[in-house]
Each structure stands twice: as C-alpha cells, then as structure tokens.
Image (tube, rainbow, N blue to C red):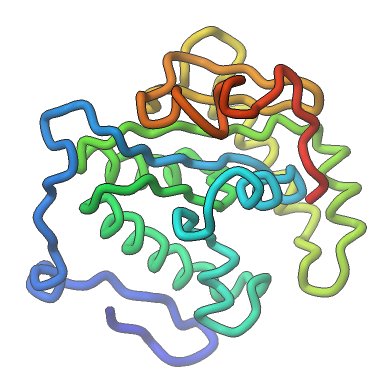
Length: 223
C-alpha cells in the first residue's frame, strides 16, 4: 500500500500487480454451505457493540476498528487514522475469510457502502454474513457518549448521523433479514429478535441461541 505524507494524507489503492502476490486461494466452503460465518456489528457509538461482542466472542475472532486505529497511530479513538484502519480491516477480513474460522467485525458499519464491502468479501468466499444490529435509542447513545472522557467521546454530530443512517438504510422491522445478510440479530434495550435462519455455524451454540446462553431478553451492556 502506498501512502502520502502530510496533513491530508490518505491511503491509496494498490494496483492489481501489487495485490496479486497477496491473494490466497479461496477454499473455505466454496460452492458449499460454510460452517464459518462473518458477523457484522451495526450500531452507533455508545450502543454497546464492543462490550457485547467482547462478552460473546473470543478475542481471536474479533477484528476491531478501534484496535486497528490504535495499531496505526497509538490511539484507538483518533478518527484521523480511520482511513488506514478501515483499509487494514478490509484486508484482515479478506484474509481471514480464506481460512476456516468465524470473523466478527467490531465497527459502526453505519453506512450501506461500508457494509457492502464486507458483504462482497463474504460472498466471494461463500461465507454467510450475519448482522448484529444494536437498536438502541439515540438518547441512550448520547448519554453514554457524554459520560466518556477525553478522546473516547466522539462528536455528537457523527453519532447522530450514524444512528440516523442505520435506521434509514437497514430495515429490521419485518421478518426477513436485510438484503445481503443470511440472517440478522436485532438487540434492543430489552429484547432480542432474530430475522431469518441463523447459519449452522451459529445456530447451535453461543451467542445467539437460547441453548447457548442468550436469554429471551438482553439489556444492551453499557458502552
């Protein structure tokens, strides 16, 4: 990957030739029903994504935008590092989907184009994608964000815009999962709903099925 140096630096796309040596054979469930899953968190800052994910998935399965920002610049909350962090996130997810393992993406994923990149990667690897949507009121997200200190507090305008985008572009009111997802789990303040049939890799165990430990109602953890 090439980068420019300076205040307006942005990561630049690799050429096809530069990427070719990084490509790995896609053998995970190609043309079959994969036992592995891409789990995509979707929620505004303060909705409880990272706390919930850390309690329900082992750390080796989680690819976190905060963690990648910290890897880039030393501060998980420095939004200036986001372009590099997201590029790394996509590269890691693409690589992980080449191997037999479930991958959990811990990021806001608030814009449809951001979700589509991950959906395309999952489709190319023949791995089903499951959305975990944190349907938390904006007022709750704002209150949690206001209680954060220093750089952990994100701009309120970004929080509200992300919350509004998710509500507008990711329909979860009906019985079917949003387009592109094999299933979705919608976590509210006092309820959990499943849209569609969970893939075999998740349906039989934690964290989604009642037998695996998820109660019928689950308050979203504090962010």
